[in-house]
Amino acid sequence: MKGLGTEVLLPKEEIMRRVTELAASITKDYTGKDLLVVGVLKGSFIFMADLIRVIQIPSTVDFVRIASYGRKKVSAGRIVIDKDVDTPVTGRDLLIVEDILDTGLTLSGLVDMMKQRNPASLKVCVLLDKPSRRLVPFTADYVGFSIPDEFVVGYGLDCDEKYRYFPEVRILRESEA
Image (cartoon, rainbow, N blue to C red; front, side, top):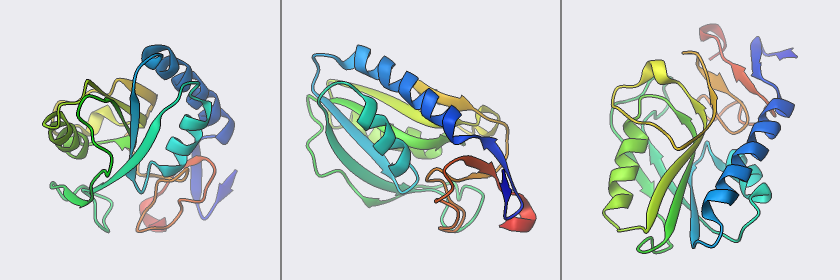
């Protein structure tokens, strides 16, 4: 399926299959624990909604908004906290859910900030991982897909607030941005 000149990288069915597998691993790892799932806005909201619907244990949900891209397709190299979590983190088993692990700057900054709040445990779940783009060492605990160094949109990921609505992940070419 093509549209607006974008090429499908991950079809909706493949994404949902992987989300179900991730949820099974998370359920196994967190059964009997006090799970707090924190989504990184805005990109993770669709992934996180699908994920928590298939996690088979009770959890609390909160959100943080941290940006490193602004309106560009390349990381600005710094993070800005727009919205912090409202739920206390201390003593909780914290799972951060993010749409994409790219340079590692955003997630490493967020993890450092959350560790200072003394969670019982802290893990990171990402839908997409682009290891070739890493600027700081960072490895997620749960990874949906490792992808090539392409700019992707859809399934919540955007370019200047556009294209989040695609049900699949698509490659956005320079001429389409």
